[in-house]
Structures are given as C-alpha cells and as structure tokens.
Image (tube, helix red, strand yellow):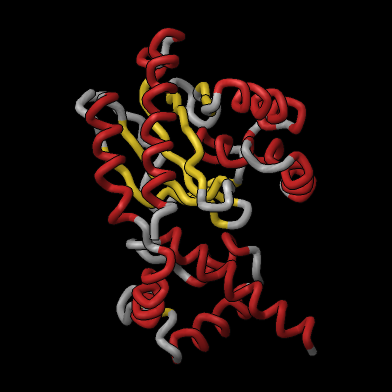
Length: 254
C-alpha cells in the first residue's frame, strides 16, 4: 500500500514539473504523457483529479492543461521561507551591468539547478540557453557545474551513478570529462562551460553558499564565444567570485 502511494506521488510530482516546463503555452494530455513517460490514461486520470483540487486547470476550447490557481497560493505561502529574489536582483543587475553579459541566479533543487533570475547586459549579442524556470541536472551548464563541484566527492559520485548525463548531453558529459572540469572548477573557484550545450554559447558561474557552507545557489554569466577569451575569462571569473561572495553574505543574513 505504501509503495503504491509513493508511486502515485512520484508520478504527480513528475507530471507537475513537466506541466510547469510547458507554461505559459500549456500542453495536451498526449504531450504530457510522452514527456513524463507515463501512460496516457493514467495522466488523464491524474490531471483530472488534480483539477478537482485546483492544482491543474484545462482550457475549455483547446483542451490544453496548465498549472492551477491553488499552486499559486501554495507557492506564495512557501515564498516566505524560500524566496530570496528580493535580495538577489540588485546583485544580478550589478553583475550584468559590470560585465555587459547576461547574468543569472540559479538555485540548487535536489539533483538539479533551476534558473530563477535573469538580467541582460548591454552587449547586443546574447545567449538564449538559459531563461527563468529552466532546469538542468547538476554538472550541466556552468551553474550546475559550479554547484556540483563544491559538493563532497561522495555526493558527486552518487549523483553521477544515478544520472547518465552522457546519454543526454554527449560525450563531454561523461564521468571522466566531468571529473576533469570539477577539478578545474575547484582550482579556479569558478566553473566554465565552453559551449557544451549550444556551440558558440559560453557560460561561467560561481557557487553561492548558505550558512552551513553548502553550495545552494549560483551566479552565472553567458554570452557568445568571442567574448570569452582567456584574458576576459580571468576578469569575469574574478567578477563572479566577488559578487558570489557578497551574495553569500547577504543570503546568510536572516
């Protein structure tokens, strides 16, 4: 009985996350079933049950599903404890202004990084790999690499054991290559993504630590490859570390 309940909860969690990725356009039952890897009849039954409780909502004309209003209410309640964006936006803005690149703030959520804040700099050519709400497994993109690199080796090994990054993101995300970048990130203090997700789109990130010294958030910069030569990477790395330190101090203050 317990296993069956846990299975339903896991499916609902996956379904809501996939539905969140589809916002604001919404998604059909068939698309959600495909993305979540759950049988269509099961998805329809779960969505209907969630709709009765306000957790999902279906457009009458198109039949597309959306997150429901009750999730907004729950999110507002949770924001009292988890929302740090008021403290973050000023620093992200300063980082974008100082660098001219697009600056981001991401949060570690379990085995993923989630982008929460974006601020574009003055340089007209931008990378569009990151946007608010996008998730990547730890180790993917500069923010995910920065967060992963500052975890204990045992946690990193367990994460890589459970997550086949190479299958989804290519051979540059094999365990061997990731450990190389982890060691380099620890040496430099900041992570670099040399166009591994989208060729020509580079990123750099520095971890932001909580009061226990754990990497809980990350600041990152993205831009076109020509803006990330060796000399400028050193400058941007120092800039990231400076702002990450200030933000760590700010977020550790109640």
